[in-house]
Length: 458
Figure 1 (cartoon, rainbow, N blue to C red):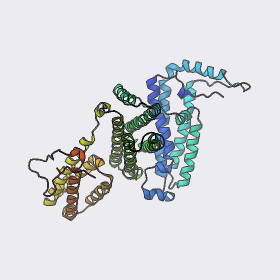
Figure 2 (figure 1 turned 90 degrees about the vertical axis):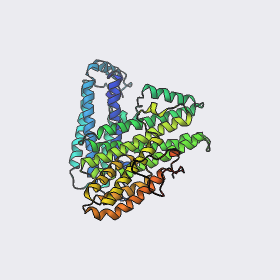
Figure 3 (figure 1 turned 180 degrees about the vertical axis):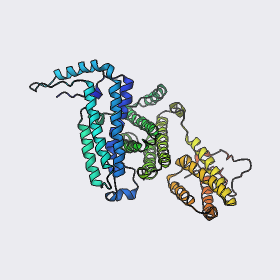
């Protein structure tokens, strides 16, 4: 039986319109699918192990927002394609005339507009149902999973949406990126290795494109939580990529080779950064009501993923070719050296603020310290080792309590000792060897804590 798949008709839309809209529709559809899977939700280890006790009402509200946005995208697609309706109708006539022998004659649909209008109606229906469910007092796990099977199953069965679940749109690269990656692939002699490496690059660039869509989505308080759908999609796709590397790519290289070592590092760093995002940064974001706090968490998480994908692309390219320049691929890319220098400077500035508060013990210096701590958590903290994040969160929560400034002095002393240790340890990173520590004219590194020690940071 012919499929009336408007969205995959090559003659219906221009390439630009088709790619932009279809990439985003594919992203939101697959994001909804992954968000109904417990393993891909942003939950702490405790929440995941006690998921049967969790209320999933807020998660349903996020999915409702995604379904409503999909309906809006389809409406836009409907408007953009009107000039090519004649081409579509010719295509549709051709499909109908090629029906299988012996099958009853198929009734041709009235127009492409009708096809897309049916998609919009279906998505609007789901949005209304999900809206009602998001107002319920409690929604248990099993009901949430059953709802997912119904929603995702219905969308996959639709001939115009199902194709977006089955296919993968490749990310569009600029000319410089294409040329750089072509040079990398040209250095790989084995065809099977070249194909696997190309697949890996496509997945990394697609992950980078997802982070760009996340950053666009969180700009508005009305849409910010919808980005959680994309985070779940990134988690699912990236974990799948790590499995692809382990099972399909690593066995093609000797265990002790530089390529195998590079791929091992890529998998390890990817899994650790995903854990930071999904089990720390985004935990409980779905429940938060303060739009500034939600935005800060989302922005931090998106920044971690953007840096991760950029670093992985450059590290993978450099493994095969020394001619690749990260700043050509990503003009805003910050190398490990840049990140470490910025991290050390920001830690030092925070240390100075904590020291000033310890001396004065007043509201002014406390506020200055908290402002710098907030800025550090939103920025350079992502470049620290994951094990240090929880201490920063604990100190921030403690200093944010409603108490007199002098009540915080003992904690400030502990925080100062912690920061001195971090400054010293960060300065032991190999990339900072031979890089003198520059402080302000009146400030000196604390005695016994000279951050110019060139030893390795572990």
